[in-house]
Length: 287
Image 1: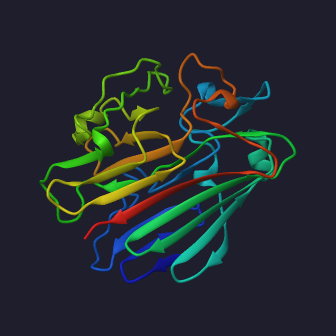
Image 2: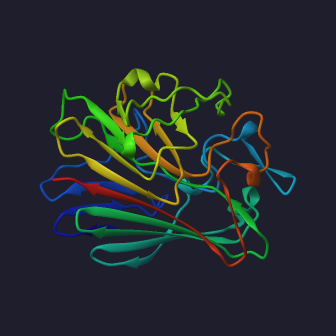
């Protein structure tokens, strides 16, 4: 599916409901292209868990169920609900396969909409079952590093207000170690270096705020706005991968020593029957 306006175009796949491309009218592309030699995703959607779960399982109401990394959404097939010039909606509903891991009836509607030079993506998870539904949701967009026309320039991530959030790292079992580490940001800015990701992602549970800027120093970049997404991860695959992921989440991945219950995941929501969990990510291309 393709949407476009006078500023941007975007392509969305039904596989994973995933954004596949984001480009300006002048031909500059900003999204990672999914080369499997590095990482075959581009901007996966994470639901109903984020990250690895201990032993590849999650507990729901005391019952242990198998679940893969980041849940099942990024490899599920969505259906097209709406398609227009500048807007499309894709949907995932529960199935026998999803209920084996996550025993709830739900719909996940993802709306992609172009508003000037901004791609707004809204994800709405509706609890269609008759009992409270614990859930996490996350965006995982990968942006080119370096950005077009910025070869050889330092790239940075900036947080508003000079924020300096502490962060956590994964342990050897692939789950988050509880120790908090000093911020990788100085007065709200982190200069990207591949060595930052030798030990995998930087995982910020609190304090990152609701906006970020990514780009090369002295050049137009990408402004990101997060709605109902209090956690933030920044990741690139070790080995000098040519992309960086800036990942706003609603909920954290499992932290070693915490309860295995999904409802106990830090930052998770409990969605009442008939209610929705709504999260939004805006990506604005500067000119």
